[in-house]
Image 1 (tube, rainbow over the protein chains, first blue to last red):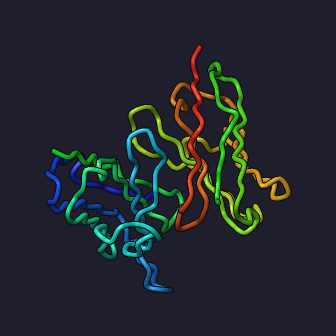
Image 2: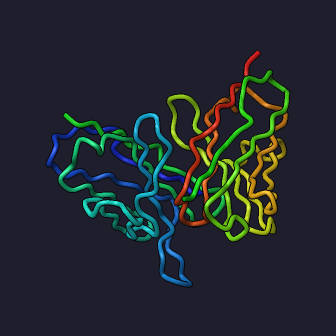
Length: 113
Length: 116
């Protein structure tokens, strides 16, 4: 099974700051066939269902603000949130879609000071 | 508008069974793979099971394999999760989600509580 290690587990920032969340997979998520990384990022606001932010490591889902940026390849991935806003208060999860069983990172709780 | 609406949850005793449903609307259900994901109270997300658009491919998490069965009825636009031999650790909010490598729509979730 692919283990997803996500860090930090929590962080608190002031509005306007930039946030970086890291996700490391125990195996490469890069498909040799199409050179795509099967890594997604989800945002879960309090009391809500998860929402897709980023898929294939760096493709922003339609309607997601461009301050959310996904990057990385192979086993190391990053979600960057630039100019954090109060509405970004949420839990963030990475997930690999490369192979079954599908696995999530343990999550990062983002708090706004 | 794409909608996924789960139902069938509730309080159930350990060892008993329960069947969840996810009614889809606003898209061609038969074109999409579907998934069940759960979240125990205060915990993170855990993938449970996936099924391809034609039910040709089905996958389960080890934690539910042999006890849960995912299925779908494309004529009824409905995804199912039959859960048997329920355990206290199956207590969670169960979500259905659309897609294979991109879970772009999620339901609001249905709560399953396993307790005597």
